[in-house]
Image (cartoon, rainbow, N blue to C red; front, side):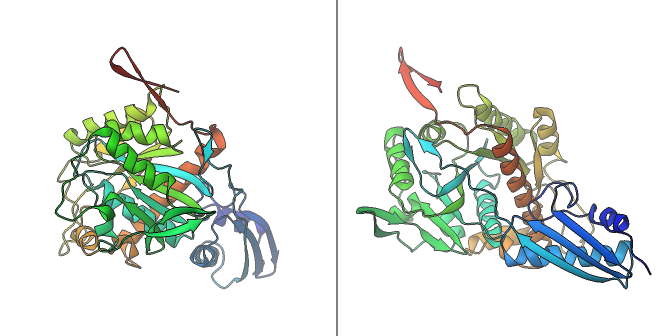
Length: 378
């Protein structure tokens, strides 16, 4: 059979490169297609440097051409990696955070919606995709990231960087972690006023040896309060992700969370909304979906607020169990959960890329006190 270049391109339009929103042809990932009889050579360029991404791209191209064009086609795929140009470091009050390219805040309007669980799984999925990732556990009063990464008994070490003593983040599963939980006893309540909490956070931000990071994820406390303002005062955040469950009481608070970031005086781009606990599927009835907390509430909210919907996650016992034993569920290979977290993470990366292409860098928020009340301005 004689293969046709147009048929090959049409087939490749049905798949996308890792981390790309558009299909391979529209995004420009496919740089060349050569056909000769039943042989075809496909040259493709991707931005994800991981071996997994390269292999997955090659396999998808082979399977798609065999399925949609000719099952006996002889295919050679040449995958080239071109890392995206690194953006300028984030500027903070005249200072810089060397090496940190993107700072993404993960927030929720209320507690109990799985914000920390989503943060942990986003982080390990980004690491699996080949990115350099860190988490700052900014949930001062309820730090849970050390438990989810099985590092409860670890302590950050002191290292010397350019003559200054810095905290070296604890690392597991390819993710660097700092949390107030490393500096308190498990049964010790953190009873701090706002300024003391802000000081602790600033130390973890500026006195840490984060090194080179593609993504620093901030696990924010639930709600919209003093800690959030302190973080945005200290850091120019690239964008924010809001986590919610589908029920109305959570959606009402999630809406407030989105509104906080979108305030003119704050102006942090909202990358999108993630719907957690979207439905329950019992193991004995894998085809059934039970919408315990309502159906597609967060998706509908995203449409109403005109922000991206990043995806949904099921209510699954293994996600909770994985977090409790310190091994995030996204590390489980060849499972539907891994695929769900991978899809959401790809959407987050896509929105970060789009945000960096379309919008200017975010400025740190300046907070002043006027006539006894707090005023937020740029």
